[in-house]
Length: 330
Image (cartoon, rainbow, N blue to C red):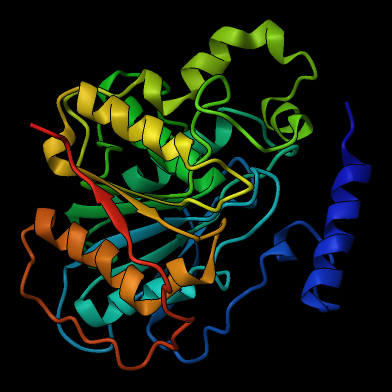
């Protein structure tokens, strides 16, 4: 099983689409952001020792005093491309002005590492930050975990499996430290291979799971879906998905939300369907929508009323359509 040719062609297509000579490998398919405007940061903090990708970057507010609540990003990229501190992370640095420390997480991409390694790495990173909260001036009881696309799958499974004990053995011996985030935010996630539709090509899943015969690992596929682990204990969860998404169908998020409601967790969870938005649409990364993520988080972290100043982070456009929010019908 070798998907090198497919991956190389996708790197070339991305370089042509972005008209950029800097897109030369799977990491740079989502380009790096310019971090020079953000001086208060600690880069490449290792949280693991298995691969070179097990590092994270921490950005701190320019003023105020910690310990800071944490916003942690898990980038997308079909489990095989992307990198921490990418251009898709920068809009969330608006959280700095609301008093959050913002963390961009690196994890091992496929085929270097297959499922379930990235999920275990995310759990390890959460545990690492909690264990070392005092060292890095962080609040261990206020951790927001965000994921987009494949990153939403990894973030959600890392979170909800904490309630079922699945994949709970820590890679680096921190089993006694909780890996469960306090708030979860999931954008355009590809959560379930078996249900609710899928548009991603089959080889992407084969590359992620490390086998061409997916039919032979049906039980693993079932367990890899966060929907298999949702209970009434889930942390507050915000789901967002564009209705014009042709990469991951919006029904993936609808199915996730329906499972939350069925488990009895609907009162602290929300699904926002964004009419007309495509996959990773710029409108979703616009200031107005990013603010909704922090508003939701602060509601459950007990920080409502804190600073909500958005003066320095550049805008990336405004949603043209009105958002449709869903809450459980009583």
